[in-house]
Length: 407
Image (cartoon, rainbow, N blue to C red):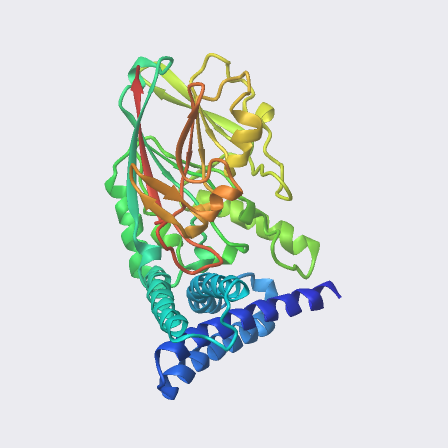
């Protein structure tokens, strides 16, 4: 019953979007071919999405085919949402005007002229997200950005002054389709030549075999002092239906084995020391801990066994909500935390030094980039790959390079 109600609501919303979009087109052109081509494209997008949704194998999770169907539908829907907002605002204005107007014999020429003008504005503005989503699907998801930060700490050991960390996160190999572009991203990571490389979770979407065609790409990642990693929420295989409970257990073990095969030391509530000229810093890695319905397997206490409070510590924790709810005020003092998970929702607007916005910020307080409270830092990596929506609009795939400095 609940599913039926949701489908009815979804259908009503789509119809509302389509009616307003069609009215905007109808207002500015009498060309019936143009008018109905618009409708035909929408119908094809909807049919394709619902067909793929019904027929795809749910034991495979979100396949690239499902993600592309989702991307096409969003590319059609989002611009119409812009049209709806503008045209509904125009309707509301007209209703108020008519309520207080002595004119009761229909729309005046002035109102009709304004309607056409508003329709032109609505369609013009709708073209912006339409073009942006097309770019995001074709090229934006490969528009890798190297973001560099320099962080100073009073308690950093002297020998680690100038030490560099490359952080990558959220590979989501099950979404990949273009080997050449992924190879370019991996080469860009290696070009940073950092001392250590840290991967903060979600190597697959759900299943270990998603990495089969990409192992020989990611095993080329290099770092002088080693490569370390943790698990993300997608690595546990929680989002698909398994034939048998043992299949899920076996898959999880294979996912963990991937890290070793591509040269990463996987930390599951564990720690390691990085040593340099007789001094050391602690590297702590926890399993996934997320607010709400996400798994809470991350155990700070267990992961920090044999580490001293006065040690300088780098914590890898996939979900930034862990830092907000547990880490930042922990008396054990984790100076730097590295997370991922949010992807910045893969859609947003970022203008350095002026504007950073994404719907992701309504869910996560720390959703992309660097944050600091009381001398403790967290960097939320926007992710290397993509998931659900097969593209990125304004929130580009990220390679983070952090240089540690002695204050």
